[in-house]
Amino acid sequence: MPRKGENIYRRKDGRWEGRVRIEKKKYVSVYAHSYGEVRRKVAEIRATTVFNAADVTFDAASRAWLKHSETRVKPSSLSNYTYLLNKHILPYFKDIKLSDLSRHDLHNFIDMKLTNGRLKRIGGISKKYLRDRVSIVKSVAAYAEQEFEIQNRIRYAETVKVEKAKINVPDKVEKQTLYKYLNGNKGGTYVHIGTPKTASSARIIPIAPKLMKLLQSCFGKNELFILSGTNDPIEPARLRNEFLHILKSCGLPHMKFHTLRHIFASSCIRQGFDVAAVSEMLGHSNKSMTLDRYTHSSMETKQKYMRSFRL
Image 1 (spheres, rainbow, N blue to C red):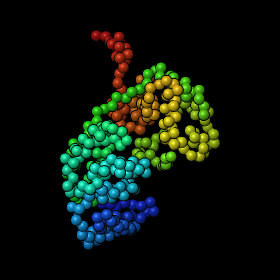
Image 2: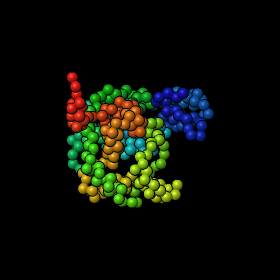
Image 3: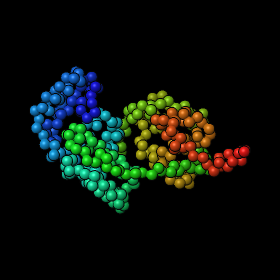
Image 4: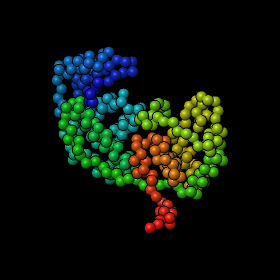
């Protein structure tokens, strides 16, 4: 079986492929019908290749890391990595040699992004967004350590600590207003349709009878998508914009579309649903994640318990 960092993997056609760096920014690929044969070919090329790892820049390492990630992550994730590298990370780290990359460089990058890291507006980006960018920087450094045998000096560097965000769930009146609107109204990006990122994301979820009635009113031919009514799915940006329009029409405060997931989860817990069932429907890896995020007693619940308390 391939080891982590070997740059050897099995292709969809059944063959094995190994990628070997022969120059600063140049790679060659070798192919075979077995892992052992590819590994032998890779070893032969590396034995005859002279390469000065001290000259590898962050730019070259990041491009190699992206190429390495092509067969390991979803297209949406790869697109996000490429965007963050080009827009946020490479302008700062591009010409820094990996052998010189230090914790001081990483901490300066963090400070800069927190104070003046926005691309189109003045000010810094949030700690949550910054954590994603720092994670990519550390991933590139870890990859370079395995691929180029360059010491990773930022492996244990302190990163961005993000406080647990409070989940703002609409109150009862706001939820009723939103439901009445949805119940009374009928009917520039690349959309990639593929499998979910994780095994737990591929799951079957029962549909509530009330929601089924709404969906049935949208049903057309079996091969059509429900939301668009065509053979093509609705664009995510269009869905978000339509959701914001609905909120504005109802006089509701701004919220993210993802908040609907929190509304569903919080309502399930409040109504006494089994935590294990809720966790599986949400696609959480374990019940503790669901408990930690959604099982916070309200003041009304605490008062109810205290009224029934007996010594």
